[in-house]
Image (tube, rainbow, N blue to C red; front, top):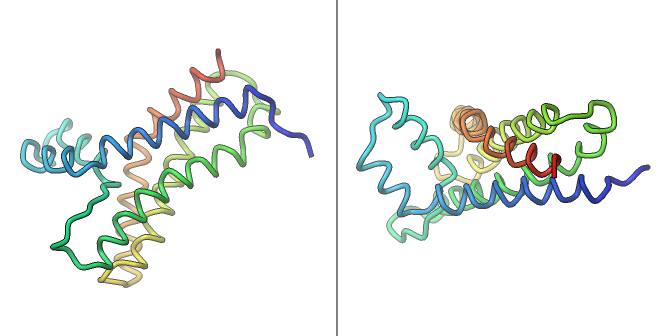
Length: 162
């Protein structure tokens, strides 16, 4: 089994750091409150900002404990799963296809799959546990990955080129 080189590990680290930054900044209660009070889902910008705030985390004591756990778990899982997907395919991806486009697509798709899986798993811990709710959360996670994943892909592209 061949290990990924330093360039691959560095790109995985940069992609993970980009994901962590997105979740910490855009998932913060301050950003989520700003988005909810200043945007609507009927505009492109509003939809984009609301989707970026999807993996929001909170310490709100007014919500049920299971929902708080599910929200925080969702935010943690997004970052952990992006790191896992990037690590799993980093060496194999560039072993066959070289170039920046492959790195960009890898980062983007890792974010889509991580968002969907994080949403599905986190929904199982929410107060409204049901398969329908888990599928709705997974769909929202995939949407998050689709709209925010290009940022992770861009980070991968830049890290692989340098």
